[in-house]
Amino acid sequence: MKRQKARRVIKNNMKTLIIFELTSMRNSNNHTLFLLILFLMIFSSCEKKLYETEPDIYVDDTGFKIVGYLAAGGFEQIDRLELDKLTHLNLAFANPDKDGNLVFSRNADIKPVVNKGHEAGLKVFVSLAGGGRPDTLVWKSVLLHENRPVFVKEILDYVEANELDGVDVDIEWNLLPAIGDLYTPFVVELKNALHARGKGISTALGATGLHEAVSQESLEAYDFINVMVYDKTGIWRPDDIGPHSPYDYAEDAIRFWTEERNIPAEKITLGLPFYGFDFTPPARYISYKKIVEAGPEFAYLDSAGLKFYNGIPMIVRKTRLAMENLGGVMIWEISSDTLGDLSLLRAMHQCIQAGDCEVKTYYRDEDGDGTGDPSYPYQACEKPEGYVDIW
Image 1: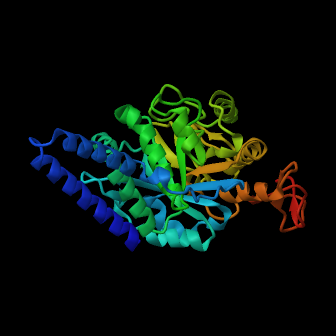
Image 2 (image 1 turned 45 degrees about the vertical axis):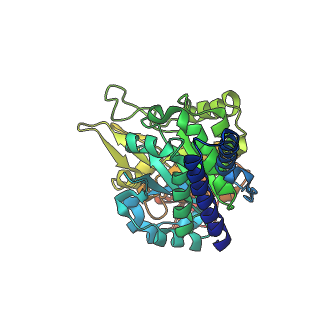
Image 3 (image 1 turned 180 degrees about the vertical axis):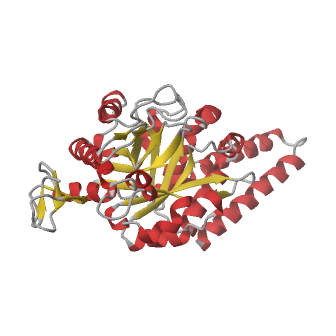
């Protein structure tokens, strides 16, 4: 680190010296002036390609991924979450302030949560931007050609300071039109910088469409892509009441990404919602945890009245779809899950652990009367002892 710092000091001093010489010799020797300008151009070019010339030491993770997003509002639940059932934890969200400093939502200290993730054996990423309408003017400013290297370094410093394993770029539709052509150079430079330090880079993008700012070059720079297969409709569309994450939407997403965008299937995770929308006036977002508080039977449905969500059978079905076709699953957002046996994460994990078989849901039969308790489901290939397949 000291050697790198010394190099930066030398480079800065050299640039200052060159600029001084150019100023003092402006009216003297044109030939010398030309050589100095040429040297400065070469120097600047080398500086811009700093990360490109550093070796890529990132080791690709080829296992089946279970990526869970956790927003700042869910940090207080970290000790109650079954983190061991994930492979990746994405902390949402960090954004640049007006001075270009990377700041996490609610000014939260992420270090304790990162430590909890690492204790559970997870890779922990910080997720940038998000769908909460971050400041477009600030983002455009930090991504400008002249500011981008400084912002990339700010991200790297944040990653190192918090002992993170990578960065998730969650720049979405409200921000993409504002930054336009600045998107791809940023993604490529960030990827080179992260890979030079053995860190990963991922993104979260839509199910069946992309803004024109998201180029094929940028897509191929990501180690994996978390596809947000939800919000097909929502409370912002009060006249379009219905499922926001149906099964056929997942099938459409797989076709779009693997066939139309030609992204390798193993680089895609299938996004699953742990929330729903209640269109009962006033329409609102509703967590899965809140939905099943009304009774365990709601864990096995995808709708109840004007509430639309994904229950255990749908989550298991989609998990099987991902296991057969993609490189993993992704969850928004894990603190919206319920605790205990009705947990969607637990059902998902049991399904994955079961492996390549026809998974069924069984229910604990504590009194041996042949009828199970819907509060205690288990996903398995064969009936576990003390469980039955009806309730």
